[in-house]
Image (cartoon, rainbow, N blue to C red; front, side):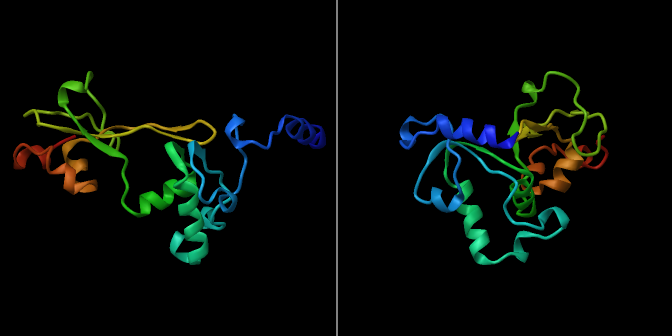
Length: 170
């Protein structure tokens, strides 16, 4: 069953990368190349699913991860390993948005409490939706002022209109 699939893929393969719709390659072979979209598979940094961190791996492995993710010009489709590395580096995938752009009464993405924006802040902190390879979607949402301040203090402080707005939210 696998062999016919391999043969079908081989029959459609072309040697000119510029003409290819999809390119299957290793990070080693991709050095020096760029692609509009890069999808990183889950075969990097073995052991991370068992609790190992990027710091438990050698420099060659860390550099290879960098090579893989830096090949993307427009879109990088993350996997759980890369997402975990970014989270360990305090990447929260958040942005500041206008409260006017929040159309309904939101539920905090962190504490799950209803968010009350009174008094209304100048900005609201929104966690972006993330789509991993394989179309696995991690939903984003709005942070209440208290959670925004706890999780992302450098942005969360922008949500606090006064001391009370960040001490009794949710």
